[in-house]
Image (cartoon, rainbow, N blue to C red; front, side, top):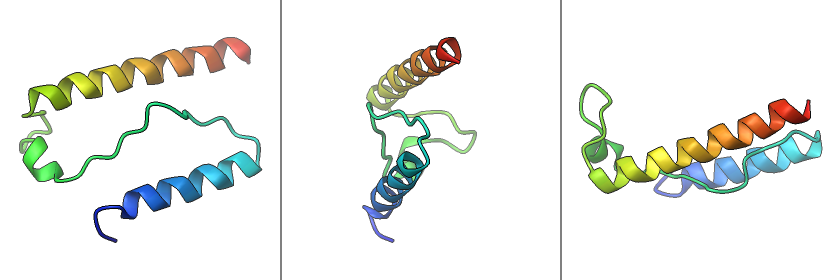
Length: 72
């Protein structure tokens, strides 16, 4: 619970996934607080800098996913 509750849950999940040799995206990490102020009612991003950050994150995720697919 609280502002850092998601952080703790994420770290615990990463540890458990590492124990069973699963790949996880290490960087970049993303934690979004006050989502009600960042997203509108339709799920659109209302803060331009946050939208740019999310686009960069998704590009990193796609690249990481592609590398896993190629390695398989």
